[in-house]
Length: 221
Figure (cartoon, rainbow, N blue to C red):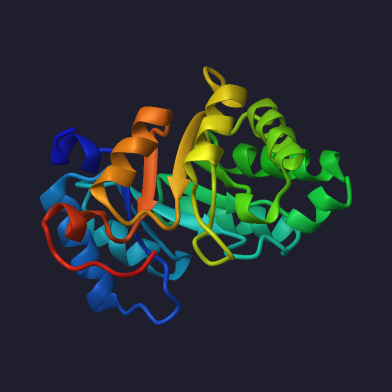
């Protein structure tokens, strides 16, 4: 795969707590130069980034990040405010504890509520695969598709592991034709990116893709 095709699937990401506006602005510039799918940043920088980018690249932000343990009303407010500030895409984290307690209706209704709050804007649902059993992953595939989300996403990049080829293959088996797939966390080589896309991922969440594809040293998410 050529580099530009890969970059067109990348959510160019910077979610570190210590990120400054100077770093976010550099991310924006790289995204415009490389024509990435979006930038993905924390909510506090959304309005500033939207104004700076002036429509050149969509801004994605995160909700309930990184633990997913805030209540539904808080996540809904956070998502709606992000859209008001100009975000085009929202990546939300499910309440993992509720899933493990078997409160599947809660998990589904929360996704539905956030999707309703953001309307036609893109919703990606982070299920944090590294913390789930195979059965829980399959269950979440069904819930995410049924709730009307646009994407199912592997990971925050802030837990015990990131995307794996096995998880993307599972998503493709369970979700193909019903919602799209985002692989995120731990993507460290061009070969990784190519393989995730070949397996069915439509988006790649990574802070390293631009540098990797330029042949530069890259660290981070």
